[in-house]
Length: 527
Image (cartoon, rainbow, N blue to C red):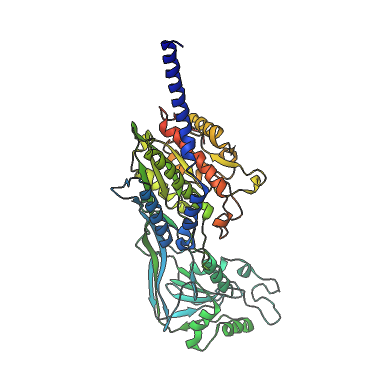
């Protein structure tokens, strides 16, 4: 072999081996993402200690602290003025009953009475309640005849209608009941038209209403504070309707020596209206209070090299739906403890690469966001007040539920749903497909990417807030399963092999995005 031939051969060998080594780097660091560390993270994130991670609650704060600690351990920078936390200004409008005193009794909202859908601030003081029977006005029967209830507190029987001992209605003259009995609103609307200031509507049905309210979710509606509509400070002139069970009606009537059933029987037997003025002091105060909600996004930053001004964001939401009224914890292992675990695993893989001198050319922001379950609030807030310019953000890879198998794929679980990859950038879609073909070989299911799909998943997780700003996105998702938003979404049901493999797909896609020469083009605007 001549010297010249040897030199050409040597240079070719160096070039080939260099390219080969470069091609092997993603696989080397993708293998850092493993089931053991993923399980360790998720067992903490989805533990009872974090109380279902509801936005604004202590459990969410604990989760945020854990994630920030992991970012610090990985050597990620704290990009929010030296902090890993971006405070998110959230608030809620909460209905409060400050006082509800009748006579000497202080009544309890949700137990002794119920005020539904009131959005006014109101204080009511009086020394009299007027009992107005059934509150019915007809030609042959009128509970309100010769009574002026304007600006009065009235107590009425909000059920049935007067009938005699044979079951004959005093209204219809037959066994058939009138619309006063069959309509839910006729009686209340009639009394409202007479302009009392408070209506105490008593019926047997209220106990069932109270039980439903007690069992219903106590989760309040939270919004970005600047979007929250502040209630008017002036009280409405519309009468307040207070629904009360029979025991509360008896409590109100007791000073007069009557009971609800006694008065009802007298009305039925006589067929004549009965009204009574009850001399009892009333002191009521209630209204809407705006309450600040503590919340924060958690951000870890890895600076790039020659293209460091451009940024890739990798997101997942760390909040979930919290604790049920009966004390059962919704751990949210899949939703979205799996996504948060994926972000931590991917961050670890890039950190290992950087330690070995293979850091990304572009910068990466690893971000777990708050308030997704309340309406994509954390990601919305970030895109309004970005820590890094949105114009420099090349893409968002968003992970929300990657640890389970949906019923459609039980027989072939090696899959992941991808949503949004082609909505704004055909090139991003190609990059994603190539990463999967080269490394993970998952079955990529685009069912939810179809704009005709009724679930409209593209609009339902945090990536959409970036897409609204024309930033290309990919959403990684395992589909809905039987434990979605349920106490059954626990760590023992997670397939960690799939969780890590899906996380690796995100990593390989991210590796390409942060190291290629040009950012993915934006060449589409699909819905």
